[in-house]
Length: 218
Image (tube, rainbow, N blue to C red; front, side, top):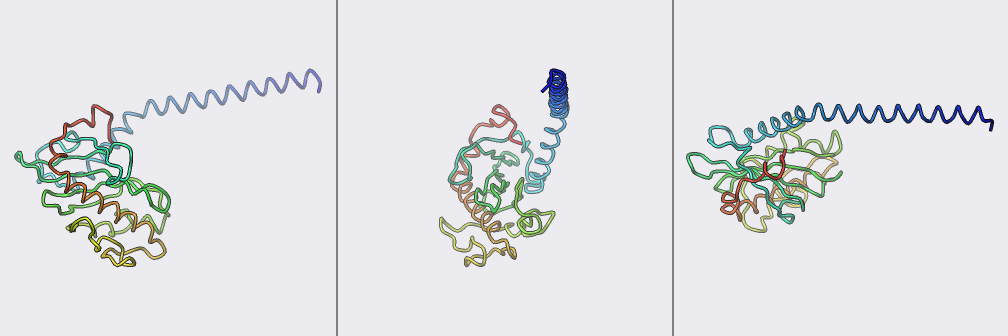
């Protein structure tokens, strides 16, 4: 290879490196510039979900701020701390909304928010994030299907309630045609979470609000 060819290759390499560096800097600058906006949007989405599960007339406290972090991998499906939001009205503790994870979804973790009132009744469940198959497993999303509403008003009777399973397994919840793994994972996660909320209710309500101190849970 001639000296001229080597010099040309070096120049081209330098030009490519400069463009790559410029692209990286541009991406980082964009992320930095939009970080606050993205965080605010995520908080608003979470607040909308919280208020859908625990309507404003049921609480007079700040649900987002009245939050504690707990680590309960067997119940909540993750070794990472999970946020628990507390609802109080006139000083009375009346509901909990727990972030929980179904680790056995068809395509990985399914992140959920489960609301349980002081009587142990499920007020509602919503999917926060998932990677399930479009057109099949994504029916766990309310915008795709009303299946997730089948948890409303349900209770868990003891530590081994056979009703908490999909119908194929002898339970009371419908499965999706061609996608049984996804609803089975969600049902199991919600049951574990409800049992945990009922068993630890007093402890969860009494725990200090520490979500903001340890990082935004949204």
